[in-house]
Length: 186
Image (cartoon, rainbow, N blue to C red; front, side):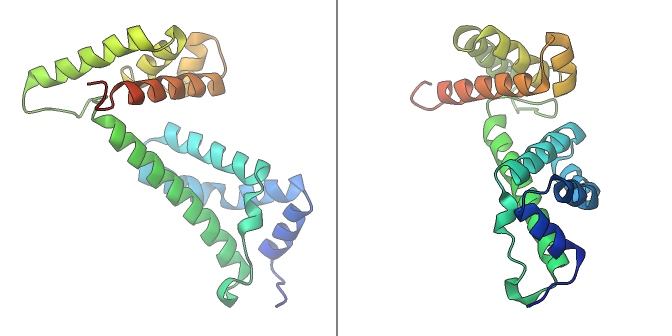
């Protein structure tokens, strides 16, 4: 089947390693996908982080190779758009699921347990775990993000480091805390 539209050309160019094609795909779909991510995550910073990670993977891991323009004989623009939409939607759902699993350990501002002492107890348990088990920089980054609700950018500026380093430090803290708060440890 012959595809004579822009997305088919862009996909061919991507397969040939064209950075220009990547930029065009990004410019064409970024706003649409960002609206989806913000709507699902209800947090513009998290949506921006997710979008950056996706487009980095899209280019570096060549995710565009998974797009099949002949899929069900649809127009290639709807296939490309559908693939990008599904990718962002799935990443948002995965992020929401991970946060829900972790939210039982880290209460947010809207968390109001039936027993006020329960919230204080959870906070105390997490604080102790952060002091005892988590490296200091990871603990600080985690506290700034989850307790003070600061953006990755704000934390990076405060800690005088890169945004990626902040994300890595928070990820380290979350991984350690998840392991610490498994039933075997409680």
